[in-house]
Image (cartoon, rainbow, N blue to C red; front, side, top):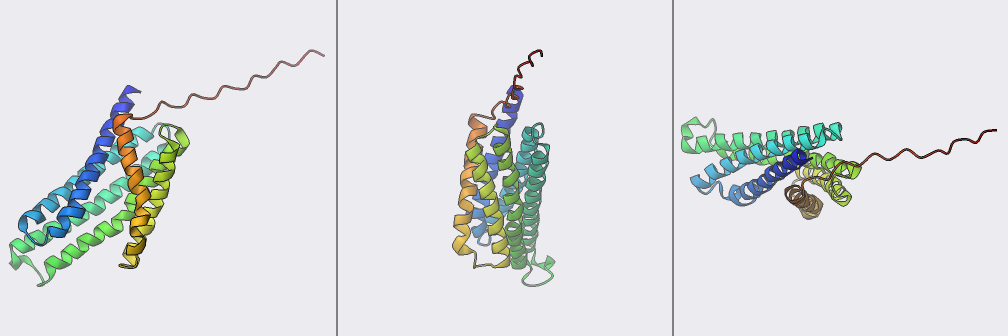
Length: 222
């Protein structure tokens, strides 16, 4: 159990790094990346940091879940790595756009760099499907094992479904999803912050003790 708690805490640390790097990169630095070279370089570095943190968190959840719920362990790891690959694709597009900005002679068309940035945004949009999906088995583990609070499990499952719906709407109906986007991701945000805090502070609960077999009175002799 102590080793599992250590695993839970470094998993929580990786998840916290994912949240911080993702927030800084996507919400703060990314909108400024077209205005200055330094922001563009910082944005690429932050996105690669997101890839590393998400990969470590996915491995951590696999280690936490595999003994009690192997299917949930594989699902969280697979969906987490899927989202990491989507962000890696975005970072590759931004790297190519930066290279073109530094040496315009490498561009095949005059609008190559802006187009690559649009593709990078698209990677984030569609990759959010995987980010939503990884919350569902994460919450299912909490619901079925008792090793994490059940209410946290429900919030993660609902938040994951909301994240997936938001990603589909954002990709298929750009602009139309803005009205409901903030509402759909609220449960996911609450669940993620709770999960990070729980893993860092408490870790994980002990496994449930098996229920004792019911006692059956011996049949009386005829």
